[in-house]
Image (cartoon, rainbow, N blue to C red; front, side, top):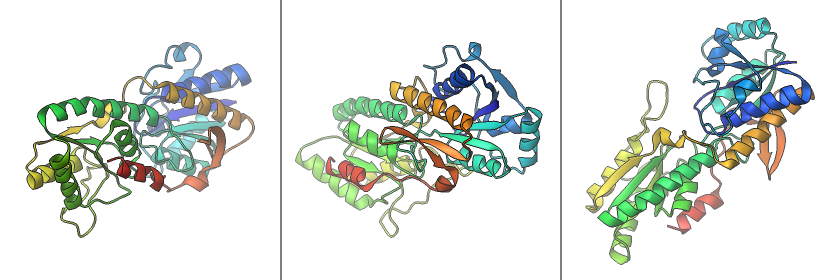
Amino acid sequence: MRIGVLTGGGDCPGLNAAIRAVVKQGLGEYGHQIIGFRNGWKGVVDGDVLQLDRSNIRNILPQGGTMLGTARFHPHSAGAMDQVMATLEAERIEALICIGGDGTLNAASKVAEQGIKIVAIPKTIDNDVYGTDLSIGYHTAVNIATEAIDRIHTTAESHNRVMVVEVMGRHAGWIATASGIAGGAEVVLTPEEPFDIEKIVKFLKHRHRAHANFSIVVVAEGAAPAKGSAMDYEVQLGQYGEIIAGAIGERVAKEIQDRTGFDTRLTVLGHVQRGGTPTPTDRILGSRFGVAAVDAITAGQSNVMTAVRNEEIVLVPLEEIAGKVKPVPEDLLRVARVLA
């Protein structure tokens, strides 16, 4: 078979592990030809291809990012479905492995509707892809955010400051919750639970009077105040509907300083969370997903996504995950609240 593979959306650590596994399993186990498309769905539209073999995947396992490049481009939204189909026909692609988050996987489901065999692999540091316990990139991002919070602790304590740390997470606060718990944050703000700035301020004042002279507040970029609360704020969006990095963090830091008088500083981790060497967990997860995707295609499976559930790799129909976001469960949010 001639199998295409692409990575779409934002980059993250662990993508190269998945690509490597697809190539090794496809070539070594089944004798398939693996064709890479550069820059996600845009590469499919443009016909920008790369024949993948053992020579060009050598030493990519520990590398962050993606050797294929990526782009935020959705052919069904851009009116480019005809070009997609023309390229797949010209390249004699019999099946396509799509590695991405909700946008890339939504595009994959649209292409699948045209009769193309699709197997998807979930990746996003936000960990909000529905139907899987973990997505590629999340574990590394939490490690990076936790290390940053650990480092910020010493500055906060030395200078008697409130330190606000903004992390990624537009629709779900997985990174904020996990790194907040692991890093010992006093307050964690997520999209799942709209916040009341007056309650936060009251808590911080009590904490600083009673037993501490510093505090750490972790804010997901998609966090927002509760309607009718004292803080008037609307989520700030950019040209393409993306959240403006630092907007909510800056506003929360200003509100805390104005209302408490405490010296308050903001750190926006931003794209630092996406970069660098993947953790062993993400390397293993990407490898497992890559092998499972090739196995699924070879067995005739289509319109499915590889997923991990209770440590087992399973296949989930794309129609079951379309348009859904996986929120942080209440029990994990409660742990963050209890440990403040």
